[in-house]
Structure formats: C-alpha cells, structure tokens
Length: 330
Ligand code: NAI
Ligand code: MG
Image (tube, rainbow, N blue to C red; front, side):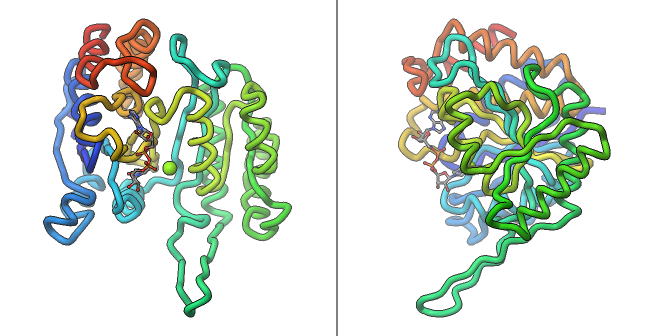
C-alpha cells in the first residue's frame, strides 16, 4: 500500500526547502502519496487560525508528516502537531560532514529530547503587573518512556559508533524535584535494561561539548535543554542548515528541520535544503525503507563534500542547484 505523507511547508524558507525535499523523495523508490496542508503565519493571517483542524487531522491520520517551519506562530503550530502524532521524543542528530567547514569536525552526537513536558508544557501565567510564573511539569512516565526509547535506540546501534550507552543531561542539583525525577527515572530504566548510562550537569555539558564532542554519543535530556543544546551542536558542525529532526510517537511521527523560517534569507532561493532533505531521509527510514534513507544520506554527503554548496556553507549555489545535485547523485 502506498504510504501517505502529510506535507506542511509553513512559512519563510519552509516554502523553499520542503519542496526541495519532496523533489528528492519523488526521485526515490518506493513511491509515496503526498497530501499538502497549511500551517503557520500566512494561514493565520488569512483565516485567523495558525493550525487549521484539517491539518491537525491529516498529521494525526497519515503515515508520517514532513513540516518546514512556522514564524511567530511556531509554538501554536509545532506543539499541537507533535501532540497530533503522539510524539514523546525529538530525535536530533548533529554530525559534521567532510567538506563542510565545522568548528568541531569530530562532532557526531544524537540528542534525544523529551518532547511533551518540562518548561514547554504551556503552564504560564501573568499573575500581576509584576509577576509572571511558569509551572514545570515532569512525570515519571514521560521520563521513563524517553529512557526506554533511548535504550532501544542504542541497542539497535542507531547511536554514533564511538560511544556506548547514553548520557543523561540535567540540572538536578538545583531543580531537585523535577530534574531529580527525570534523572532518577532515566538512570533506573538504563539500569533495568543493562544499558550503560552516565550523567552530566547541563551547564558543565555546555562547556564540555564544544571543548571535546567525542566524549558524547547519545544524549538524553529534558525539553528546553534539548532545544538549546542541539542548536549549540548545530554551531559546532556548520550551522542550522544541516540539522534534521524527528518527532517520534508510538505509531506516527513528524519530521522537520531544526531551523526556523530564516526571514533574513527567505524568498531568495538560497536556503540550504540539507536539513529538510535529511529530515525526509529520517522519514523514509522511519517508514521502514532503510536502504532508501541511506541512499538519500549518501547523496547529501557527496554533495556536501564536493559541492555545490549554499551561502551558509560559503558556497554560492541556489537551493535548486543543490537539490538537483542531490537528485543527480541518487
Ligand atoms: P532560524 O533558524 O530561522 O534562523 C537562524 C539563522 O540561521 C538565520 O541567520 C538563518 O538565515 C540561518 N538559517 C536557518 N536555516 C537555514 C538554512 N536552511 N539555510 C541557510 N541558513 C539558514 O531561527 P530564528 O531566526 O531564530 O527564527 C526565525 C523564525 O523562525 C522565528 O519566527 C521563529 O519563531 C521561527 N522558528 C520556527 C521553528 C519551527 O517552526 N520549528 C523553529 C525555530 C524558529
Ligand atoms: Mg529550536
């Protein structure tokens, strides 16, 4: 049966890099059925709603979703979409590629970020002219679910080869109750499953990762920490134009580049399609077409190594030229 994929370009360079990723998927076997849907600032301006109900329903009911980015409405779009696919983990690989000028060319890490709670659970309030508060939510169940996924991830050999097990990154020395619970549950699950797990305080990690990324492989962390630290890792490998991500649930998933709408370059046709194309490769792999996913990754790596490259990687090629080169290498 042909798998159905919801395609949401969103705003800004989402409208440039998602069509590029679809062109790459269309050059592959197997064939997919693509269903397009709207979300983001433009549809909000037009209809008053950043995430139309039809889009939510499609993401919830198709086999997988590919999403670009949304602008000011990003949180109104991506948080419900992650919920629509039942995602509990955001998988964010960050690795340097031969041929790309990286601050740390030896970087090869995968962040497994808790994707439902922490400080992104939406419990914020303005209580007075002076006081605003945020309630941080951490449950044992979500912490364990993430750690169980991490155990399977490393057991399946999906982590970088240079490190066994995973590292739990947290700030349990200060947030003793919330990060304390996250840490305790994650380490307990690893212990139950006989998976090697060590731990690192978040602030120390933010220093140690750029100094020597080879110390780390799979990194398990709370929601906000995963968001921030994976962007830090993007800086080590050559920028946001390179980082794909997967929002994985038990029977559905949504794939998106880590970057946003890049308003500074949107509309110019010069955005780097790599992050979106690699997100599409993760999607194809998630649907069970492992070889097709590998072919896309190999083609991307070959283009990163030999060019053409976009401006963020000190090249002068357009999005279309890089996409055509990727398809050519397939
Ligand atoms: P951004 O990721 O859009 O851009 C940061 C910098 O990286 C910019 O200089 C941009 O030109 C560059 N960049 C990003 N992707 C690139 C690519 N593919 N090729 C070449 N250069 C690239 O982050 P920023 O500027 O903080 O946010 C812009 C808008 O995007 C905001 O409205 C924000 O809310 C939204 N956003 C949406 C996200 C989502 O929908 N998941 C995620 C992050 C931001
Ligand atoms: Mg982010």
